[in-house]
Image 1 (cartoon, rainbow, N blue to C red):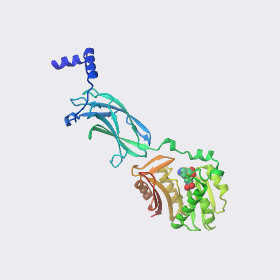
Image 2: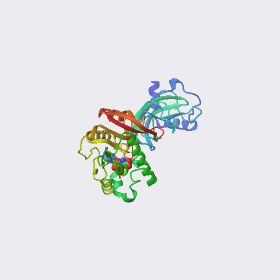
Image 3: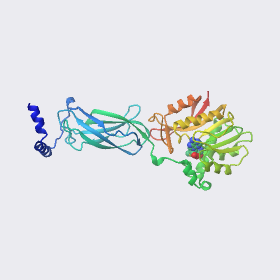
Image 4: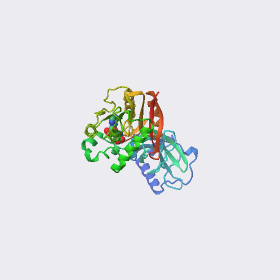
Length: 366
Ligand SMILES: C[S@@+](CC[C@H](N)C(=O)[O-])C[C@H]1O[C@@H](n2cnc3c(N)ncnc32)[C@H](O)[C@@H]1O
């Protein structure tokens, strides 16, 4: 009877006004750690973000409920806050410090509140989980998690067709598809790549398939290197790039053809010694990468090899990013290669960012 009366009374306007005034005059503070019993509550996602862009901010809407007998507040020497932490796929907290969100008003028992928190995303792509919990000092409770893939930034996406269509290839062929500061640097890089290919077994009589040949960085150094018994076939999705190569590198045993995203337009199956993908798998999605490796297999001799570079990160489960920069999980890439019958050797390895590395692989058949 007493409880029924109290609950009826609690709904009256008068009672709510008195309670509001009391809360206003003496805003609750927390000046002592909560006991385990007082740490009961829930956080529910109202709009779990399906994905977010690296370096962006993600707004999460939450419903908070305090199911303990005491009021939680972000005021006082032991404030209760909401902590947002990115977790990597191996279950470790990502190295960015957690975002701590104050309760905008005290959270009274049995009076749920909605909260919108803005959480900065990691600065790298990866398959992350976002974990939220209440926290008081070192104590965390009522945590909830949701998977939030952190994908590449739209601003770093590249439309190669548009790039080639609008560029002045005659003057700018050396920087249009690469990150070179000068033509000398571009040519030095071509020579170094040629040296690396020679070290891996390339001879003047080799037949080279250059997939994603761009404006002919490798055609330029291979033209004086390959003999008439050797040969070169270059392909790219960019029609303008192919037209530029065609008029620039004129040799009887050199051919250029526009290809598709997952198809290589040459038909001389089983005749190439080496298929090169330089800075190409850094721009293709993993299914495209696999299909291009299958195309290379069709065109390679049984002794032929692929030389390819990829950006790898353990934060990524399979692949993540945009055409501007694609990042793969190294084991996933190697599994795809193995499924296609390739065995991989690492022939170069460089740090890419704090979490990612760039690998140069040689993929042998068998
Ligand atoms: C960063 S550039 C590198 C060009 C050249 N390999 C080099 O190292 O100078 C990437 C090139 O790959 C081409 N490309 C991207 N995806 C491709 C695909 N699926 N098939 C063929 N070419 C592709 C682009 O058009 C562009 O020319």
